[in-house]
Every structure is written in structure tokens, then in C-alpha cells.
Length: 501
Image 1 (cartoon, helix red, strand yellow):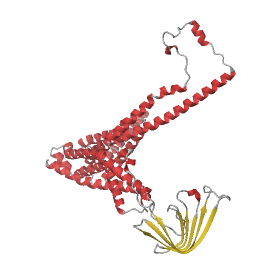
Image 2 (cartoon, one colour):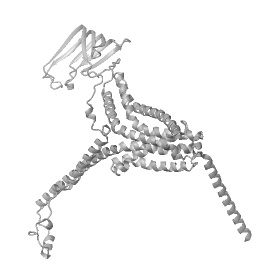
Image 3 (tube, helix red, strand yellow):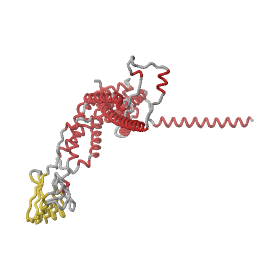
Image 4 (cartoon, helix red, strand yellow):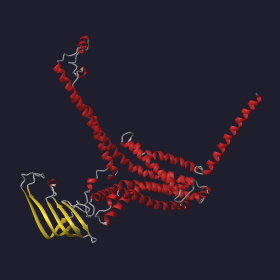
């Protein structure tokens, strides 16, 4: 490797690693803010939150790589241009493309790594991350009994406390409704009123204990008639007084419970390119099979019409005047038979309409599912190729702008990344709705941006001052001057014509 390659490559690697970490952190914060309300207040240990952040950091890498390549290439060649290092390289007879060669090779390696990452690591991280997120979202909040409010997150209990002291254990004025968890329509069978009590957990927070003092317990036993009151029901009401009563409640419903990860493997984000291709092919076959069988199966909803060409040749009638006149005759139909024919025709029409609508809905849903899996398979490639496309945008733009740092490069990078994101969403929408061919929708963004990158590369090779404001100021002054001269010339010609007359 020559010194020029080491210089440019060293200038690229530092900003790339830094910007990649920054971009991953930004995307991670966006995901956390999206699910923040569902993550806080849960009785979950810190290690599970660390695992969740780790998995989602891995998930954001494929999206962060193109933006990091764009920003770092802009900063690299912007710095080289700002400090006239790029000018010195050109004065030594080295072209801009030659100066970009080492970074281009590095970006090609990043592109290959991005495809491997999208195909192998990303599905695993998606499976682990989203399954853990689902378990955290479905976990119940931490036990939090507030004053004067009925708390019903404990299965089978409704609890109200009038006063809760600072130690979070001592309670005053308790009302506890206990009802069967198997039959919620049975109502509250048991009510406990206590003057005071203590609340604490035992066995590593597996059980909640209420020690109640000076209270009454009201219970109802007997047949309830399915939960509804009837005078004929044989009911027995019991009231008992206690000085001290201990009640133990299981906290099994609280905390994190891991779901079987196999339940999430059906999603397209959890599969690699080979698996996506297999699922897309099977969905395509089912779609075509249903579509091809639509017409043959619809024949059962129609009455048969007389057609000579469907009969064997030896029994087919020969057309002539007598056949034509016979076919023109209307069959004699009695009024009652006519009503039956109309009712039968209406029923058949309704059946055909229902059959057509159900098949249309089925084919639309099946087609969208097929397009979605096929689109995700193409995105394994498009996200990787977008790294190289962003380099074609960033490197020439940095050489043209000649500004490094986190100022103009960040602004330009964000603008082009937003443009790429919008074009990707639009292409995906067209592909999912079946408006365009799925590969066209998947590669729509990269195809447009690669032509823009080629244009900027051509400008950079010709040392164009595309973003230099002096060029546009001079151009505006020339245009203004030409317009003024043409106006003066027209006025002079007009005056000359007047004097000549």
C-alpha cells in the first residue's frame, strides 16, 4: 500500500468508527423513546434491560452503516479539500479517482460485511430483541398500591388502602375483595375489612403477605345460579371477627416470563435471504394455484348453456335454417316456473358475488404477504449496496464542497439520508401494494441515487465549483448585465425609429 492510500484510508477510518457509534446511539435512542412507556415501571432486573439495549444496538447497525459511510466519506474528502491536501495530490499527477481508490476498496469490504450481517446477525438479533421486548411489554407493572384507589392487578383481589405510611409497609384502613379467579361473573364472595395491617414479600418476592389487625371477614357460600342472584338460591352468609389475620398472595403473575422464541420465527425480519426466498416461492405457488383454479371452480355457480361445440362430433347438430329458427324461439315458461327461475338466478348471482369477493380478498392478502417476504429478501441486498451508493455520493461531494468537520457534512448527509429513506419507503409501498414489480420497488432508491452519485463524481473529476457561491454570484451578475444591455439596446432602437420617422 502506498503512502497516499495510507493517508486517505487513515483519514477515513477514524470518522467512520466515530460516526457509526454516534448513528447507532441515535437510532437506539429513537427506538427506546418509541417504547419508553412500556419499559418503565416493570419489576425486571437490570440485566434484561442491558440485553435489550444490546440486541437493539445490533439491530440498528444495518441502517446506521450507510449513513456512517456517507458522513465519514464527506468529512474525509472535505477535510482533504479544506486543507489543500487534495490539491497537492492532484498537482502530483494523481487523479481524484486514484485518491479515492483505497477508501473505495474499504467501502466494498464494508458492503460485503453489511450483506453478511443483514443475512446472518440481523435475523438472530431481531428474534432475540423483539421476543424480549414482547415479554417486557406484557410483564405486569411493579406492585404499587396507592391510597384511596382500588388496586386490581393481583388476580382474584381488589384492594383499597386509606393510609399508606412512609415505610411502605404499614397500612391503615384496608378493604379487600376476594373473588374466584375461575369465574369472574360470580361476584365478590368474600370481603375483608381491617383497621390496620402490614404488607411485605417473602421467598425472593415470590409471595405477598398481608398481616391484618382488628377486622371483620364477610363471606358468602352456596349456589349462586351462575353468578346471578335469585330468591330460590340456597345461600349462607358468614361474619367473623379477628384480632390478627395473615393472608398470603402469590406474585406469580408479576415479573418477566420468557415466551418461546419459535412463536416469532414466522416474521420476515427473523429470516435470512435463503429462508425468505423459500417462503416467497411457496407463497407465489399458492397464489398462482388459487388464481388458476378460480375459473374452473366458479363453473359450479353457473347453469349450463347449450353449445354445439362442446358435444361430440357425431351428435352435434348441423347448423341450418331450421336450427336457426329453432334457436330463435322462446321457451314457454309458466308464471310459477318463471318466479322459480328468477329466484334461482338471484341465488346463483349472490353466490357468484360472494365467491368472487372472498377469493378477491384471499388473493389480495396472499399477494401482499408474498410481496412482503420477497421485498425483505431484496432488502438484504439493497441495504448492503446502499453503503457503496452513499460512498459515491459522499466522496465526490466532499471533494466539491471542501468543508470538513461536523458542520456542512452533517447537514448534507442528513438531507441525502432523508431522501434515501423517503425513496425507500415509496418504493416499498408500491411493491407491497402490487403496483410495481417487487425488485423495481426494492431497488428504486439505490437506482436513482447512484445516478446522482455518478453526476457528482463527474463534477468532482472536472474540479467543478458546484457549491461555490461565488460562481452563482458571478453568473447572476452576468445575466443581469445582459438583461440590462438588451433593455438599453431595445430602448435605443425604439428612439432611433422615432427620430427617423
